[in-house]
Image 1 (cartoon, one colour):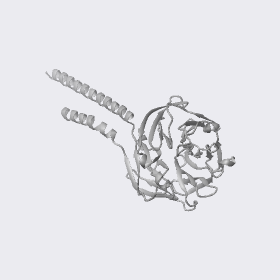
Image 2: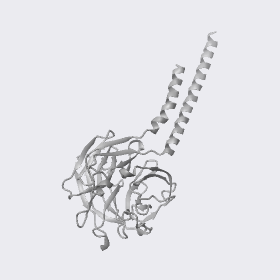
Image 3: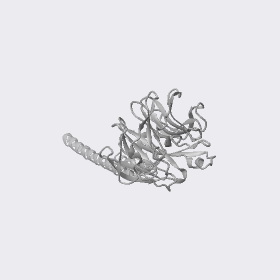
Length: 365
C-alpha cells in the first residue's frame, strides 16, 4: 500500500503543473457575427457576445455552442451592440448600443431581463451640451454597480467627447462625469486610433470606477458619488487600451489590440504597477476581456477590424483564456510546496505507524 501511495503522489507531481498550464479555448461559429462586446453570466455560467451589425445577443457555452439569447428587431437598423455587462444582483444584461448611420447618431443603453429575455427599458443617452460634440458621441463600454446604476463611456476622443453617462436602475439617463482631466494628456494625432477616447470601464466595490483611455493609454479613477476623476499613476502607459475587467483578488486586466496587461495596486488605485503583459494575436483583433469561471481571464477575438474595413463573411470567432506565465510559475511553486507537505505528512504517518506496531509487539511479548 505504501508503494502505491508513493506512486500516486509522484504521478500528481508530474501531472498537476501540466494541468495548470492548459488554456481554455472556445471556438464558435456564426457567419458575419463579428462580436465586439463580451460579458460573462456567472449564474448561467456562459458567455454573452454581441454583434457588430445585427440586433441580437448570443450565449456561448464553454464548449462553443452558440444560442441566440435576445433578438430585438425594434432597435434601429445597423445597430451595433458594443459594451456588455451582467448585473447579477438584478439578473439583468446591460448593453451599450450605437447606430452611426443615423443623424444624429443613436446612442442608448438597453436592459434585458435574463430570466424572461425581455427588454426592461431602452434609455436614450443624451448629447453633451457642447455643439461641437453633437452628432459625434459613441456609446461604448458599460459597467454596473450593486444598486443597478450603469455607467457608459463615450469613446469619441475629441476635446469635448470624453465623458461618462449614468443610467440609474429605472432607466433615467444623464451625463455623469466630464472631468477636465480626461482631455489633459497629449494625443498622437498620427495614430489611426487618435479619435478613440474613454473606452473600457469597471466598477470597484469601494465606490469608484476604473476607466481606460485608448488614445493616451491612461487609466482614471472616477468617484461614483460626484464624478470627480484623477489619473492613476502607472508604471507604463496602456497603449490603445480597450476593455478592462477586475478579478476577485483585485488584479485588474486590460486588453488592447495587441496586448493584455495585468495590474496591481496597494493603495486603492492611487498608483498601479504593471506586473505582467502578454502578447495577443493582432490579426484577430481582440477587443474585450472578461473574468469567467474560477477567476479565469478570457479575451474575445471578434475580428471586427474586417467589417470596419468593409470586409465580411467570417464564420469562426474565438474566446480564449489568457494565462500569465509569472502567475503560473507561482502556482506551480505552491503546488510543489503542498505536495512536499503531503509527502512529509505521509512519511510522518508511516513513522508513527511503525512505532505503534513496535509498541504493540512489545506488549504482546
